[in-house]
Length: 118
Image (cartoon, rainbow, N blue to C red):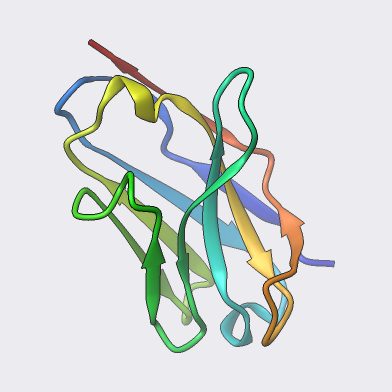
């Protein structure tokens, strides 16, 4: 069982930055893709960014050029650097671990709140 623990959320003004971290337990971390998703009140959870086990990245159009996902396989950590934050980025952000060579999420973190004030 892989456990994911997020940290780094908080309140920030529009235009500001935050960095989210996700610590993963378990030996499959380095073989698995990792991602960050978010869910705003009344909306469905959406994928924000994903990084493959080899480091390839994909982003939602709404965050391209502003967010950067990265991973440190030696430390079982994945990060989401968020710059130029907008009020519409306000949501609970969840770390996700994918089944090896798959788009299926097999573990979610508990979530961390990000609030961007205007």
